[in-house]
Image (cartoon, rainbow, N blue to C red):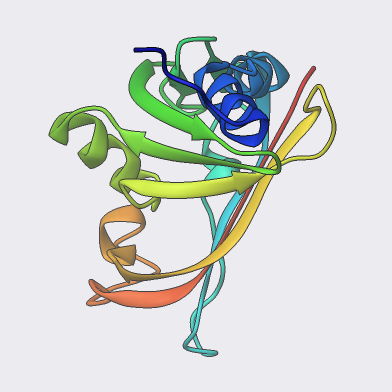
Length: 168
């Protein structure tokens, strides 16, 4: 007994078994080192000033390193102390956006110290991204822990977070 398949069915089966490599291309488009250009939080409450998180960091040395396997490191240099910390991230790219997630709870806590959520997305353009940018609404931001003198009793705020990385 022989099995006969129609031409459209054969084509469908061939296409279903093919790996186009698009995922690899997306990882390659993002792979590399990006320097932090901007990180700020604009509270929805108009009487509160914008929290310029980037002003506290050494922007020349604060970088996001993305690897081709979907992992990354956000290396943060504190401008006042000269100390650095490393935040491990997982990322998943699409054609114009990369979704990031803290790898561990500790990494999530480190992101929250920078007023970043544990999960966020950044947009990019082109076959080789030169900038990763994001401006999104967040809530539950603890401004008091960022600057107790300026943001006394401001422990759960909503507003717009803006972040931008560029390849040096």
